[in-house]
Image (cartoon, rainbow, N blue to C red; front, side, top):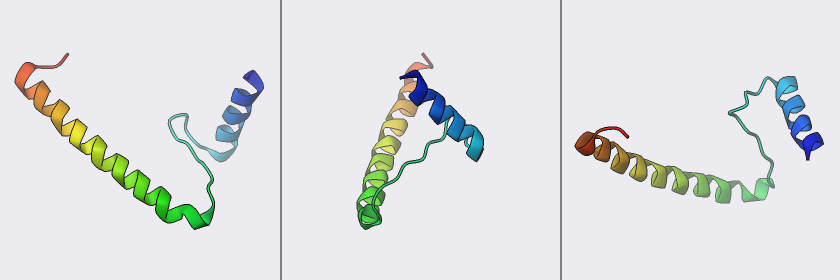
Length: 62
């Protein structure tokens, strides 16, 4: 397990990728599926973020 995490850290350093970034690979033929899934997730995240922001306005942070 440690070697796996070390390899990822090494890859980030070599590519200049920050720890809060990620990369992944998928078959090009699945690009439309991946884009659709990301768009659905982003739309859901936006709905939840608006709901949470409204809660903060009504009840205050925390």
